[in-house]
Image (cartoon, rainbow, N blue to C red; front, side, top):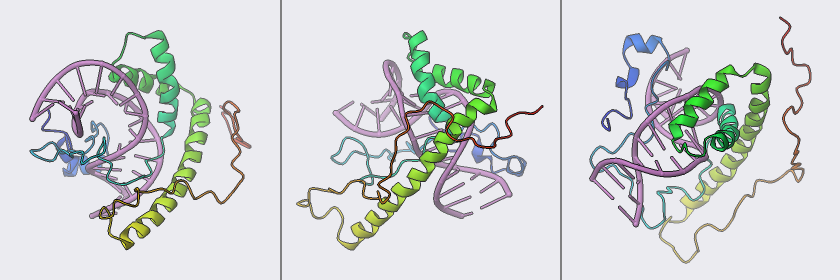
Amino acid sequence: MTGARAKGKGAAKNTKDALKPADDRKVGKRKAAVDKSSQPKAKKEKKAQKDPNKPKRPPSAFFVFLEEFRSTFKKEHPNVKAVSAVGKAAGEKWKSMSEDEKAAYEAKAAKRKVEYEKQMNAYNKRQESAGDGDEGSDRSKSEVNDEEEANEEGEQQQPEDEGEEDQEDEDEDDD
DNA sequence: CTTCTGATTGTTAGC
DNA sequence: GCTAACAATCAGAAG
C-alpha cells in the first residue's frame, strides 16, 4: 500500500491512459516519497517548511464547500472522525449540488485565486531577496519578519454577505 | 517524536 | 495538451 503512492495507477503514462486524462486516478497523492529515506525531516521547525511562507494553493470551490460541509458533517456525525467519510460525503453532495450553488463557491474560489497571485508576488519577491544573501546562514536576522506586503489596494472590503456575490447576467438555467 | 496516509475534487504549474 | 501534485482535515499508523 505504501509503495504505490506517487503514481499509484502506474503513472497513467500508458498510451491508453494518456488518451484519457486523469480520470479515475486515485490521485498519486503527495510527496510520493517514503521510498527509503525520502521522508522530509524536520530540521528544527515543527514541519518541513521548505519556504518561510510559501503561498499554498487556493482552495478550489470544492474545498471551500468542504470547509463548510465538514462543519455540518461533524455536527451530525460528531463520532465520525474519518476524513474519508467527510470526503466521500462531500464529494457526493458536491456532485448533487446545482451549478447555481456551486457557483457561489466558485466565485469565492476565484477570488482566492486572485489573492494567491498576490501572495505569489510577495513570495516571488521574497525569493529574490533570499537568493541575494545566503539563506539559512544568518540566523541573527530572526528569520523573515516581513509579512503580507502586497497590499497595494487599501480597499480590501470584506463582504460578510452570504453567497451570491455578483453573478450579474448569469444565464442560470433556462431549460 | 515526526511524518505520512486516507478520500473528496479542483486548480495550478510543469513538461 | 496532458499529467502529476497538491490544497484541508484529523486521528491513527509507521518508522
